[in-house]
Length: 318
Length: 297
Image 1 (tube, one colour):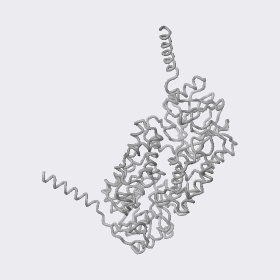
Image 2 (cartoon, chains in turn blue, cyan):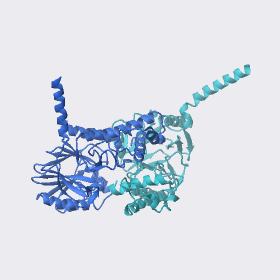
Image 3 (spheres, chains in turn green, purple):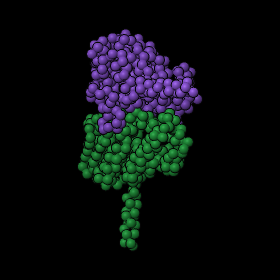
Image 4 (cartoon, helix red, strand yellow):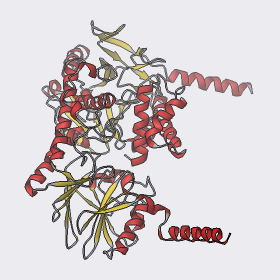
């Protein structure tokens, strides 16, 4: 019995350790963004892996013997700052820019890296999106792929996995090697995947594949014994406006994000099955207080929009 | 006493006969002849078309199994030919759940982008398409030529527009109302594709101009049967106005951290002219458009 308890304590200690991540702040802006949080900052996760936060957005940078991989340049202003800061960190050339998905608010500003000869990589559907609706600020990819792609820069690599449409129709999951961190743009932001989501209308979201997408991301994390997830956005703790950097967290955040969507879909389906008219589902669920205690930072106005969107999904399949 | 018994018996016979000839599902479906080939059918929410021909008939959007049973009865009782082609105007289940009732293996036609919503059976009531097309598909019933046009993502990924060439009619399942240019019924715009919406409207307007089409039919049962095609250009202007307002809101700093817009600080004169205007809907619509301006999608 004592042996069993000891094993349990050891396991729990190990789990606790795996969610502790050492972050070294490399540089930050003088300009404040929100409270003590600065307009931008660069953090080091390992000698090969960095995270760059600009306002509420974040990308990751991999530095290998053969060069640098930048992901999502964010905006021209952000990319210019990152470019300057990278010169202070490494003398390696920026060889690749990898896009996480097609949304302009993440992928604008790559020209400064293109001018240095960087090669751009994205999922093939992203290219179609940029052909359908081009932006002068978005550099089109030199290389597209269908299912998986790996960019190697010597002793560091970025793996890109496409698990079908989810948020946007071309979002990929990044896995850094050999550090084994996962990055899923716009979702699974630490510290908790059960946080109230920002875009409750789920614009440009393929709901039918959300849960399968996260299950595949969880499986990827498991198979690779991923050490954690890096958030693409700042997040909050407990209350909506208690902002935290949310740079890094445990991989369970991916599962929590799946649970978030599963729970909302389940509750809406339950209401429809009980005979609640689709038009009345959002008000019905809000009035009943459904998920109020489960979702962190529960926002009534946003939840009404989310319930309405999920109702539409369950009626139409889209 | 006898009289009462007789009346009760009559009532029972009447109910029994009524149930026999008018099954329960019959009560909610109605039919309206647009011309000798084109019939509009509707339930309380959706409507679709039957295009009859000497050789075969075509159904656009078999809403539900009950609807399809009614369509079959209607065709049989009016000596019309059987259904050989079923067209799915787009992938939404509430429009296409009735194909199972047609048991003579009809072609089920959809635009190829609908495919992602049919991969893996997610709704047992929906039969998978058997024919996919990319840009255009033509069906000839003998008396009518039906051209199915795909003009890019608009309402969802794969909504098509059906042109009934001889009748000079369009069937546009969503995004336009025959009653006039108006606010959308769902202001959260769950299926709208703003990035390609203008091109979609331009393509329809190009078709209307080249084929001199004066009328269209929508997929909404609450609409009147025919709308004049000038409504389509007015609806396009509505979306342009919304996009302009979203740009203004961004430029003037009226968008808060949660992407809600302070419309009370905006000039609402033009937008209030549209049918079904209300403040709350406008906030939601603009919210989607500011997202679009940021994301490009």
